[in-house]
Image 1 (tube, one colour):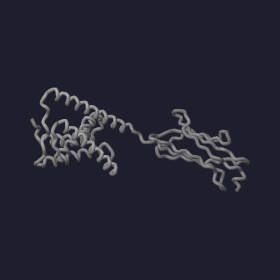
Image 2 (tube, rainbow, N blue to C red; image 1 turned 60 degrees about the horizontal axis):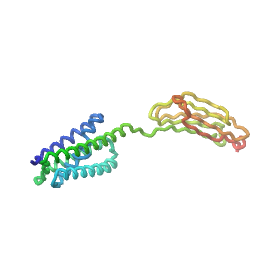
Image 3 (cartoon, rainbow, N blue to C red; image 1 turned 180 degrees about the vertical axis):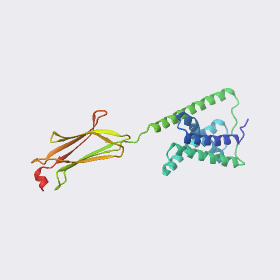
Image 4 (cartoon, rainbow, N blue to C red; image 1 turned 30 degrees about the vertical axis):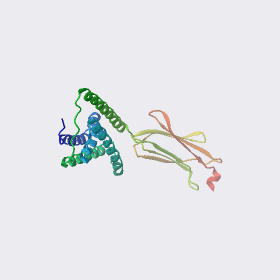
Length: 257
């Protein structure tokens, strides 16, 4: 028997709208996977084949074409969404929904749209195809779930900028030490400065919020020989060295020049 030509189009249109609503209103990974994976790997391509009017001779051939068309839609969507700056879950859901709804509406208006090929008649063939389809669907759902998990656990690169500047030539004997936090959360730091291998200054519990900068000008003695100033930044929460910088404090003759 043949599936009515409009029933599958209505189902594809409804699936697209429900999928878009689920992605926009829910952050449940399982719900998104169940609704989005078939759309990404099958439904959108099926609607596109129906809109174009491609006639297939068997169900397996139609499914193969639909999967291929869905992948093409996904690749095209990647370029378009990247150019528009919309590579987000909602952006992808909107893209597949728009393509599927448009294709279903075009196919529904076609008077010469071909019907789907008939289902296989024999039970063994039907079971084997059903098993293959179920395995492919589970594989697609697993791949999508992994992609969603990776996106949910992705964290932007965070860092702390740390610097020390020598005294300005001809200016007062003051070197500048600075810390700028671009961490994801508020952090506490301990800062130690050694001059000529000896402890010189210590700052405890510098608390910096993301984007906050701390800097200090420190007066240093100018000796007859050049001295190396080492600054070390520690995180007291894990008691380990986090950053280390150094500079050269010029000798008295260099400073006089």
